[in-house]
Length: 297
Image (cartoon, rainbow, N blue to C red; front, side):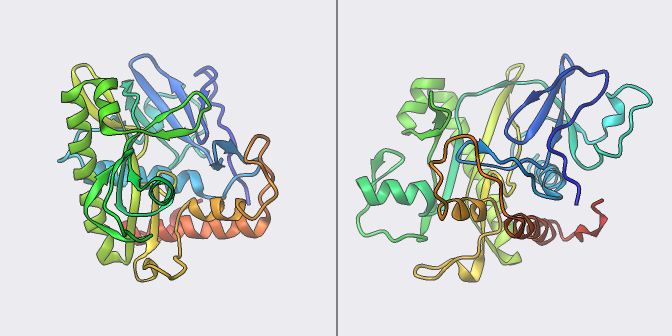
């Protein structure tokens, strides 16, 4: 099955290639193309995941549309024909791209956790803290917090995300902006969690990114996708039971079984892992949007 590992749109120059997205600078706007690349531990794997880019882009557009009442976002259009040179084939770009405002990113990873798991659990187990702040004793892995927690992070010099305290966010962006980031992130999480739970899935945690558009803070990048969030089947997500993840955690868990030091180059993913990952992404797309994935090329 064909995958897109990188895009090349003639006439738009060379894009900035992130772990997954190719970003074309159009001046005041950006064309963002979501490829099928997959990364874990900040390493990009040599083989991609079929349908992944289209799933991510479709889900991001879905959530951007569903949360505009909470915070504005950077999306202008999902129609690339408005910005690509005339005569460009749009087949490869279909369902993969969005035209957005060009914003100034805010250098804070706005992570929200509704359940104690992942790196938050690792920190709690080791230090008894959450987001570098004192936490109650006796908490259990996968335990749902009475109130979702804002546990921000920032990119360290190594390229890995580093959990930071809210006080550090205040030092980085100022008290007013820090409080706005926290408030908007928590509201976005609650909205998505409350929508997903009746559909049979728990949103364990997720990450948001924000940027400045003139003097406004808006939501940018992606939102509530299997790359930026961890989704679990609701009924399996209880303490002491193996949980069924529907996101990139499946690939991370596989990597933990390898004799790999989590430094580049990443190993090639086995065909079975690629197939199952693709199936999980397609399944969560259908569960969230209610749309059959059969329309994907």
